[in-house]
Image (cartoon, one colour):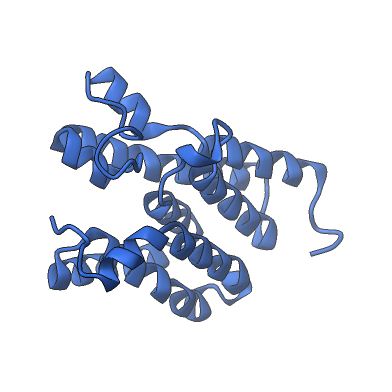
Amino acid sequence: MPGTLTSIGVLMIGLAYLLGSVPTAVLVCNSMGIADPRQQGSGNPGATNVLRIGNRTAAVLTLLGDIGKGMAALALAQLAGLTGSALGLCALSAVIGHLYPIQGISHGGKGVSTTFGVSLMLSPLLALCQILSWITLFALTRISSAASLGTALLTPLYAWWLLPQLLGILTLITLLLVARHARNIRNLINRKEPRL
């Protein structure tokens, strides 16, 4: 990667992080008179928790917003002429922004929707593989976190097939998502993870 990351690339990586940091769930809930999702339910500012404490409309808007900010980060990077590893770093930065936002690392979400958003811009086929995996795993388990974890773990395999040049970056994103689901993993092992 040396020699390929220009000042524009660095700027776009920073912008991707800021876009990832946008607290979609909090903004949606505030606008709809729903309690702060960071203080209710699982404490996660994501679509699943918004569905539990609010309603379907709020959850869908949160989902679309989290996907959209990942897409926006990559779309702007592409417009700036970034390709290859530089584009992949923007994807990583957007996901990190969602997981560990500028507002405080304790306020981030699990990163699944934003990861899907960046995947959609990197490769629509990768995103299709991810959504089909999530739907299949959720249909089998009825547990959102199990479907998300399974999909995350399958993503490096899909990347090896579709985007081998970004395998390292997408594997790192997978590891970050798995780490962010640590409590869910413990609950799954103890059979305490709630079903939808």
